[in-house]
Image 1 (cartoon, rainbow, N blue to C red):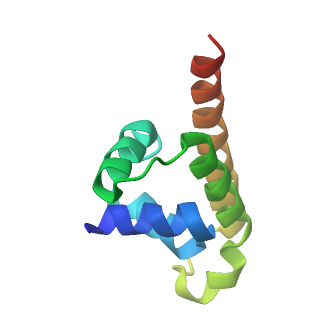
Image 2 (image 1 turned 60 degrees about the vertical axis):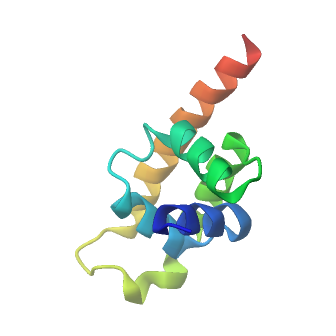
Image 3 (image 1 turned 90 degrees about the vertical axis):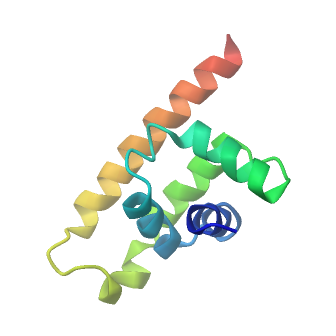
Length: 102
């Protein structure tokens, strides 16, 4: 299992805030490519991953970033990071849902 697959799996199953941070650093433009990443991870794991569920778990993980605050660079503003993650994943989720409803 490659590293991004492991991080997506942890995020999808446990809303792991560390996996979210790692995933954002590992995969450049991961939010813009979230659907492709979800498909790739689904193929690697041999299971279906729901894109909307992954986005919801990412939002949940962003709310839990304070749990890993000691491990996050002190220069990083947690509130700002949470806001950026929420904006990125909510816009990604809206785009995905609009494609489903068409």
